[in-house]
Image 1 (cartoon, one colour):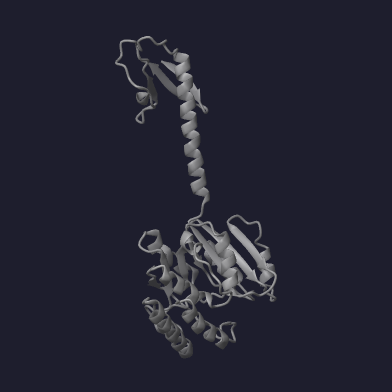
Image 2 (image 1 turned 90 degrees about the horizontal axis):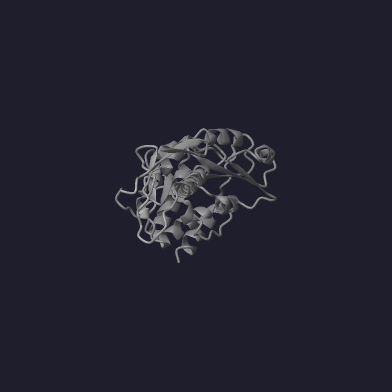
Length: 305
């Protein structure tokens, strides 16, 4: 029995006598149940015997190569996040820090992609302090381009298996994110929308907002053959490879009907799960307006064909 050091550990290598049955090279492999590696030297006719030292060195090289390959694969897998979370932000200085803190508490391997879309109220300065932090990618648009443009920036740099959008205004509770992505994690769906109206429509206290959403979602369903209750929701989760294969054009809130229509064209059934929602008023900072209503109607028609 010969003891051979391998990477600060020892492997016992046993050499079988000449009288042992002949084995092919496939049989010369480490045993999974112990630390003894049997090296059988077959009495090949007309061939020279391989010395024990040469055979040992060959096995050591093979074991080292296999070990390095396994470590490389494990290392690359552990570094890749499961979830990429895009946080588009425009003039949300009052809430951006709370949103980021809440998202970071999620117990899942994640990449935070924070995109400031030309803020002028201090949001930009808050976000800038996060540059260089592990697991956080910060992007600063030089001017206000729109939510859709910020999402496009995030989609391009996402590396997680799943991608989701999180608004920076705390209308949506980040704790719902894991619920939204669960069907994708389970392999049951490629796209999931978090619906504010599926379980409790009256958590949106604005009757006007509820009516507007119902009208837009109903029109979108009619055009796309989907059966959604909340096409306009922020919480849209996708397999990353799928969303990165879709060319997005809209730079404002037209992103919502555009992506819904383009997924429908791909014959993808969108699944919904219920989420919580705490609406805010225009006085409190809500940004969507009449202009976006008209744009949404136009996008529903435009991207249907």
